[in-house]
Length: 554
Image 1 (cartoon, helix red, strand yellow):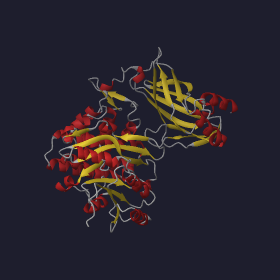
Image 2 (spheres, helix red, strand yellow):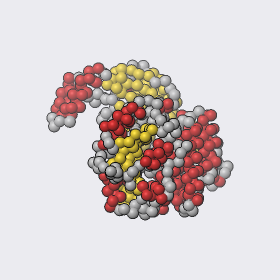
Image 3 (cartoon, helix red, strand yellow):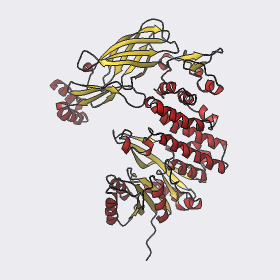
């Protein structure tokens, strides 16, 4: 008697992940729609994965274990080999370090059954930070509303949601177009998803979570996923190669220029933006290699795609294209936070440009033009300054930090003379404010020295475990305030002190903007007794009175 055809086949790809594979499979066994086939597709693992996979298959008749004869080095071959033997009319994919939420199969299958004409259904992706446990939704604006999309031309912004794992595909759609994952390249999802979007006549979006993606952003480089290996120039090369393959596909299909521009914008806003944030931490050799790889491809992108970028990102990209790599590194700090340049230049017509020179090309003048930011006229709370720590040292106290701060004011918003400034930091609900003076050094530049005594920081009664980044606040004559990031040297030596039953560490942030970072960790009785008790009672109706008593005891 032939085996009954399951409703859905879910392929779990795995390589040397014996520890997390059972969690991924368990998430499939817990699906509210249980009529599924599970294929564990092993890319020739060398750890205990084969043993674990065989044990899982022996315990559940729905599981088939497939082992590739040799390692392919990517995700495509394990998925394709599973597609060859999958029996269901609908297909999904899961990575061994992730999970499916319990209703994922039910929701996506229901979308197909309600509208049989759709070629695939997709839903929200829940991202979970493994270091903090915090959750967020991947590209939430794209999946907030359930709807049927009649082809990617109707919503080209969906190119940003390029994950193949957040979707359930109709088998006949994939077979009809011969759509398989490209083997031998990385970022195969981007090409596969772009092709699926373009070939589909209709697809359905459901707003509920259908995939749980675990993010480990600061894992050791040796264990990092392909997406987290941006420190390798081969990673840049792979991304560009995939974009070229997508370009060729779009050209062969005679798709519209608007769709090409949307794809180019996605590359600039998503792929290039990730590398841009890393530029301050790269050495000269890497920067030269990066520019050599990316600049020729950038020249082929649609001008309209550049025009859609925020001005700060356009500046970084153009500085890379112009070979001004040190300037690109400077401009990349504080992206997305309204951090001003150190200096601007003005041409004979009054246009304002990023940096100390007027660009000598039409493209450079267009991309580096800051005139529309109105640095000289923005409302003071939204004015753009640049606050940098020149040096960090130990202060006289056990947990005090001596800072030499420099503020750049390219819009000349601050009046001539000394300025009142404050450092703000809040380890808990109460804010610590340390005022100091910024003295003028030359037009548009101020400097000052401040002592930040962390022993005076107001910590919660139950203690505090967490990270904070001090902010710098300026006050204009008449009262308005402006608060901005405080950028730190990227490599000053960290130091640790113990104060008020806490271990406090001052260090460079080491990622992102590179801010000054202060990290608290409760120790002793605060960690083992006071904190846990206070947190439990804090959730009770009589928590306020108990918190007051805890303060008295301390």
